[in-house]
Image (cartoon, rainbow, N blue to C red; front, side, top):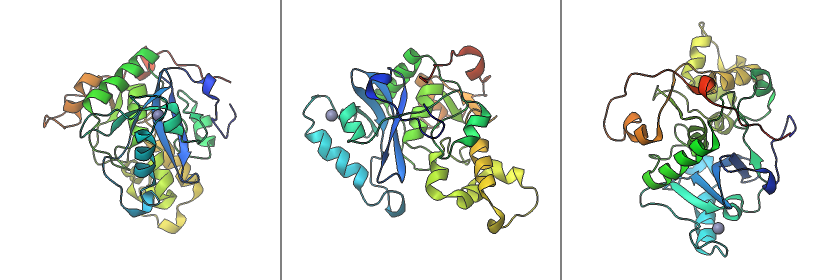
Length: 265
Ligand SMILES: [Zn+2]
């Protein structure tokens, strides 16, 4: 696996891997958790996103039409009512796109060297069984409302892999995808962690590519201090879906307890 791409072959992925593919001519990536048996659990918008992000309704329409006519698996496209979490076969997930594997536990140096946001994180992955358990649990119980900035398909996969949630509901989403989509200057302005890094007023014109790297680093869940580890069974409560207040943050166990999954080559 090279520095600039995480492209892998189908026989290289293992159950519990976080995989993704690029859609709409590389303008955005779609992420999911490979759960084995040629099946992927992923999170997609329940309703259509408006305009700018997706060029029209490519995501919804294409997925729906493919799943209706999936020739291979009768259960392909399974999802609970009102849930954006879907079980698809690998073919329908990829839609002839290339397969990529999201890297966990990379060093900050490698993280900053990656050209694209949303291809790796410094956070460590949990064990595959844990990852699959979370994905299958969320398939049955949902993952809340899709939000391109706060709660998208990449956030879903990141949560399944690490169990980490951002405490601050106003902050930038966990994933690098939001910053990729909206571009560096806007991402910098929207990013509350980054504002703390800029004590004096800084004009948009001075926000450089270097700032972009910094903002990605500042929002990576592996280095944020405002993340908590949440059991998947407690997810709805912690995210406020059930109307409960957040419990006191527990110690971040990501580094201590988890064996990092080795990424091939
Ligand atoms: Zn299918």
